[in-house]
Image (cartoon, rainbow, N blue to C red):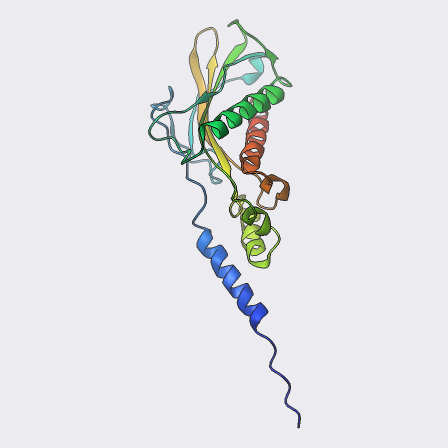
Length: 226
């Protein structure tokens, strides 16, 4: 009776190691936002019990009929310099590039809902955006883990949860919305945004994921203010 050769175990072992690596790396995502002490609304911000995604962990809100506003002043993007910033070792050049992308993204999206203005007047909002933190994608690994077996397993779970993909960058920022004529704070929140965990296009370039997050954040703000 012929003995059948033992089936190679290397693919199984490789899958096990990759799955283990994905599980370990699940706790290595980018930093969680904080209620930054150096922004004007920090004293009003409180944990957001309605947020189970981690996208808006802190918020302040008053009852507002956004339909009564049709104009908006958008202040230049501020780069947060407080000691509780979450840029890590990001270069000043990358921060400036993200701030420019943020200004462009929010202006382009918001002008579909509001007439952009330069002076306070009835029916006008003032928007202050502060870039408070960001992380870059890890070259090669962020792309590779979208297509290999172990990374795919982890990213698949994250896709269901709406969580971050492996080795993918993110962006964190504060939003403060005022009634322009009175300078009364109407709404404020801290947001963390990143691309979908299977968005391969957002893995090409160290800042691509953070920029994709800014686009998502701008879309979400327009939807909120309708």
